[in-house]
Structure formats: C-alpha cells, structure tokens
Image 1 (cartoon, helix red, strand yellow):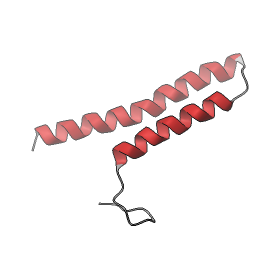
Image 2 (cartoon, rainbow, N blue to C red):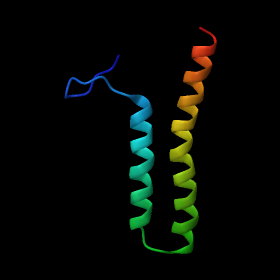
Image 3 (cartoon, one colour):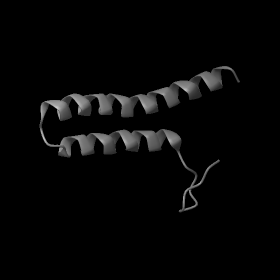
Image 4 (cartoon, rainbow, N blue to C red):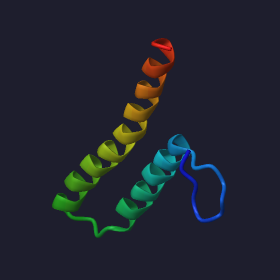
Length: 65
C-alpha cells in the first residue's frame, strides 16, 4: 500500500474524488470565454471519469476474487 508524507494509507478513491473537486474549482476560476467553457466542460468530465474507472476496476477485481 502506498503511503503519503503523513504516513497515512493513501486512498486512491478519495484522491480521485478530491482531484475531480479541485478540477471543478479550477474551471470555475477561468475567464468566461467560449473556448474555456467548452474545454472546461471536457476537463471536468475527464477528471470525473478517472474516479469512475478506478471504482469500476475495483469492483471487477473483487468479483474475480
């Protein structure tokens, strides 16, 4: 198990969720332009899919034993 500097076990599911939240906060701070809105939406979708893919992989892993 990977550990961070605080010697606490690293929770990848929590980390991906935090990444998605931080990405969303960053996109909200961007200047409102057509390009930023379009790219921001894509960035938010991509950041959420990281967590979704991790959760799905963990579920399949547990199903296969």
